[in-house]
Length: 389
Image 1 (cartoon, one colour):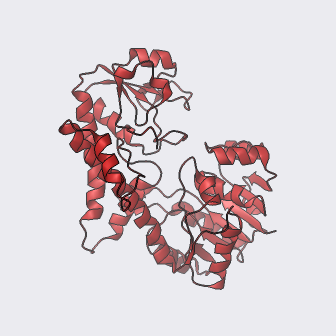
Image 2: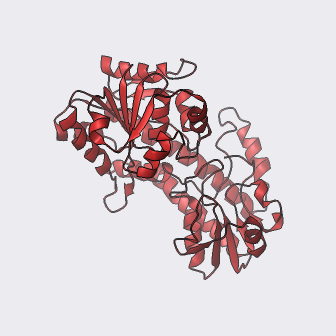
Image 3: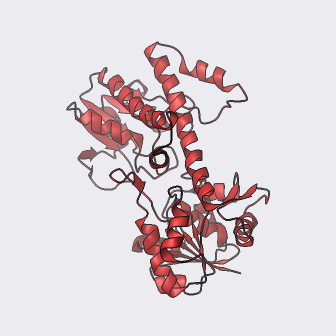
C-alpha cells in the first residue's frame, strides 16, 4: 500500500482521494476546517452520488487533516488539486496555490512524486520544475464532470500523464489499477502536450455548447423548432446525440477559464475560432436577456444558480451574468437556491420557500427544467429541450 496525499477537497481532489482510498493509505489536506471535519465523519462536502455512496458503503483508508507535516512527511505521491482561477488582468491562470503547496512540500519531503491535477497553462510544468529546481513534478490532466467526478475516475475515457518515462507509466498504472474495468487507454506524453490536451479538450466542449446555443438562437428568432432541427442534425453519427442540449451559456469551474487561458496561449499564433467561442457565449447570454425583457416582468425569479441538476456548484454559472444584466434594467431579482441558507446572495434576495417563489415571480428562469416548476409552467423561461445536462 502506498501513502498518497491529496491537496484540496473539491471535485478533483476528493474524487482522487476516494478513488485511491480503497487500495492505499490516503490523506486529504485542506485549509477548510469544516471540510476536513466532514470527511473524517464520512460525509461528503460536495454533491457527488458516487462519493457519497463510497463514504457510506466502502471501507476507505482515508483521513483528512489541516496539518501539512502529517500530510506530507511520509507520502509517496502528493496530488495537487487546488483551484487555478483565471486572472483577467494577467490573462493567465492564478497558479499561486500550486506554487504555495510545492514550496510547503519540498522542505518536508523531497522524494515524493508531486502530481499536478489542477488545470494549468501550456508550458507551466516545465517552468515550475525549473523554478523549484526539482524533477519530482509531473502533470496529469483530469477529465471530470461536476457531480460525476468519482464515476469519471472509476470509468475514465483516457488516462494521460505528462511524462514519457517509467515513472510516468507507473502513475498511469496507479490510476488504471483503481478503475473498475481496467481498459482505459493510456497516453504518456511530454508535460506541455498534456497541458494542451486539457485546454483543447475543454475548448472543444465549449465550442459544441456554443454551436447548439447559436442554432437555438436562430430557431428562436425565426420561430422554428429547435428540437426537430437538433434531433435531425444529431442523428448524423459524425455529430452524435450528446452535448447538444441548449442552455443559457456554458459556465462552471472549467469551460470559461480554460477557453480564456487557451486564447491567451494563442498569443502571436493566428486564430479565429478560439476567440469566436468565447464571444459566442457572451452573445448567447445577451440574447437570453433580450428575450426575457420582451416579457416585461417586474420580478424575475431565478430557479437555481447551479449549472445543472445534481450539482452544488454555481461558480461562474451563466445565469449569474444574466442576473447582472437584468439588474441594469431595474428588474427585481429573487433567487431560489436551496443550497444557500442566508437571506441574500450578493445584492439579491433569496426566497427558499418554493411555493412563494413560484407565485411571486412574473418570469422564472431555469437553465435546466425540474419537477419543482410544474406548478407554474407558463411562467418558466428555459431553453432546455431534453431535460438533461
